[in-house]
Image (tube, rainbow, N blue to C red; front, top):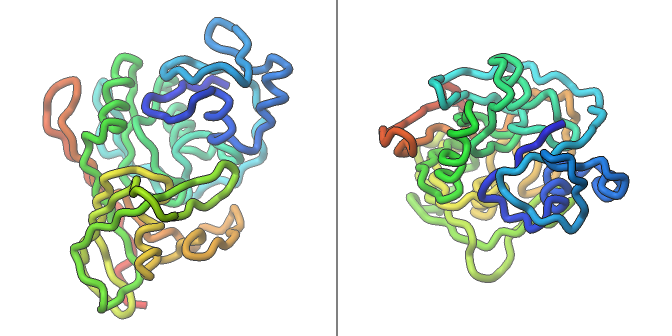
Length: 284
């Protein structure tokens, strides 16, 4: 299996990145047995520094996967970009028990494009606009566009409603994520995350919100709404973690990456891509 190390990742060593992205694999053993190498077949050790843009090769025996019964929508394609409308329950990249049932693998096969690479990521539970690069020369400019926060990201969520809360409001907090732990958490200290939240409409005890994250911490939007006492509907992680069977597709997280807007780093053109998907609108 080939893996390209993305730009903008905070990992200091390659093994740190691999253990975070694919925690079910025994990377220490694989490196000890020289089963992880770079593009020149040089063994990678647990001390090898992380360098964006290099290719890592390793062997994996993928586990049996539950097929995700939803199609990927295509929003735009040109010589450099493929912009898609990812469904809920489909991971962006191979990780852990999700390898073939990921947007990256499905789209590489569908478009016969082995260089297809996501410029950013969406959680498996989140649906919406996801941008891929199709060529090697386009990869770095678009990935840096996201890592430098030069993209306006608009999300939509259906969550609880509390008449005592006033919107629009900005939520800032310090979010941390420990390796091997499914959920992230907030702690006192200098904020490292920020989200602008707008109320769109209310229906019964729920409401629709528009969210504009300024930062991209793990589960940031889910944590910020939960911290206000209005968790996103069908969230199995916050405020309380609940295990969901791998073949249960009945309760999608009501969170959607609605739109991406940016200035194209290659052409200077103003770009805006909008999801065609919808969250529920019926009152509970």
